[in-house]
Image (cartoon, rainbow, N blue to C red; front, top):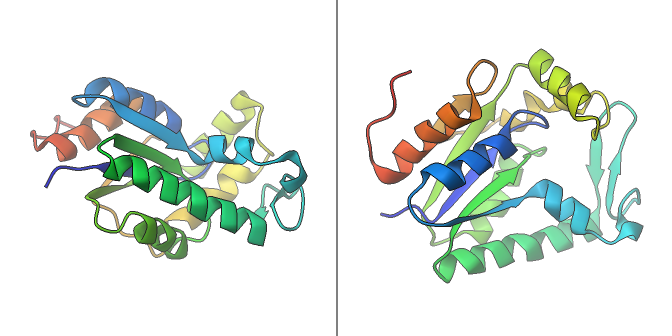
Length: 184
């Protein structure tokens, strides 16, 4: 079965976006990339910082409401529709709800061949990246580093703590293409 969708799950600042860009270079053919950050940026301003939308606590915690969930369901269905129409899709997400977050994607992607990827990074390293980025609430990376993987199982896992995005992308691409994994 040919992989149609690659879903990367990892905490904030774990290196998912870098891996996605590298995957687009190393995978055969064109792959479109969609990330939860772009989804959040696309939300109407009135849903950012509101109870029904998404809020970011001072300690890095994230809460989402019913309107967020409704739009998220539409977004995931749209991504699934593109995959069903023949586009290769890479998704960069943060499963704050662990297995429940994956179940929402599984529902949308039913019938498609999906490669589930866990992107791990030590909390301290992710926190350092968070500071360097300057666009995240301090504490988000550390609070998400482990919780996003609770109750999860993956087809492949990579750890960006000491491994560059390109090497991680090559490991993932090997699973997609059936090629031997690069030596580690």
